[in-house]
Amino acid sequence: MLSYRHAFHAGNHADVLKHFMLLQLLQYLNQKDKAYWYIDTHAGAGVYALDQGYAAKNAEYADGIGRLLARDDLPAPLAEYAALVRSLNPNGGLRLYPGSPWIALQTLRQDDRLRLFELHPSDHELLQENFRDAGRRATVEAADGFAGLKALLPPPPRRALVLIDPPYEEKQDYQRVPAALQGALKRFATGSYAVWYPLLQRQESRQLPEKLKTLPANSWLHASLTVATPSADGFGMHGSGMFVLNPPWTLKAALQDAMPYLVRVLGQDAGAAYQLEFHEN
Ligand code: SAM
Image 1 (cartoon, rainbow, N blue to C red):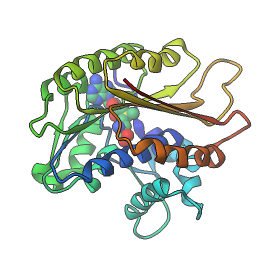
Image 2 (image 1 turned 45 degrees about the vertical axis):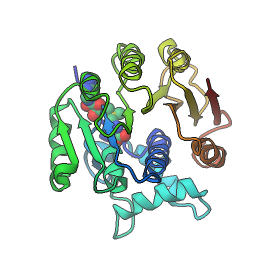
Image 3 (image 1 turned 120 degrees about the vertical axis):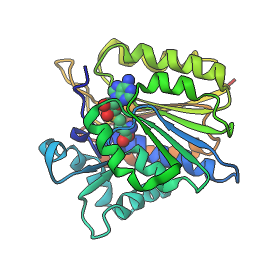
Image 4 (image 1 turned 180 degrees about the vertical axis):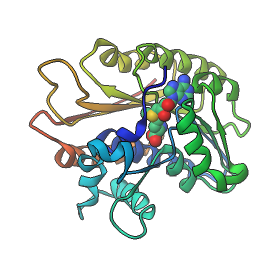
């Protein structure tokens, strides 16, 4: 059942963490003059209108990217991400918010390729529409991203970044993610893999990063941002995390710069905090 629509959440604190880290990962790959693939297993619609429809309903972006764009003291990694969001809104204000595929399309070079998977028929249609002009650079498939990933690895250029960003509305996503990564590392051990996950009080969410730490990757980095004290009733998302297998060595420094700032600017109460862990085998 596909009930999740990312438009409700576009530009919220979780998108801020995910997308600024994504931009850092892509910029690092761009430093080497060799083509790579960007694989997005759960791509969403690509671009979201914030002033209408689902996104306008709860206006989650107001406490996410909205707070960042109101600042003039952003640390460099966040300033680069904010500039990208502004480039999508050339007339000022904040009408449109970029999804992960759009951020990648702007950042990838001519010979790099995007492989995008989106299963929801409406979001797949929007994604195709948003990527109409991308030509040969991007392939958009209405298919299961976990199976699609398996079929693509190892990628022909032997360089790739994979973003795995499922909705986690179905409990099985917490099992599918480590299982997909286990298989992916067997096929393509040197790829970089970034997993987004929600900070919830349910056991599966708390256990996911611990499971990912046991995967046979050369190194990993785990960053999580708590924006509010977990609720007394046990429900709701109080933050989110990104777990990166085989991260670039530059990522840790960028996060040490950005995470305390995000706590200050996106924090909603005294429970706001961040965690940053790094491991090399
Ligand atoms: N990565 C996007 C971004 O950062 O802009 C947001 C993606 S959203 C969190 C998750 C998306 O995955 C939804 O659009 C949903 O329809 C889609 N989806 C759910 N299950 C899927 C699957 N098995 N394969 C591909 N897409 C799926």
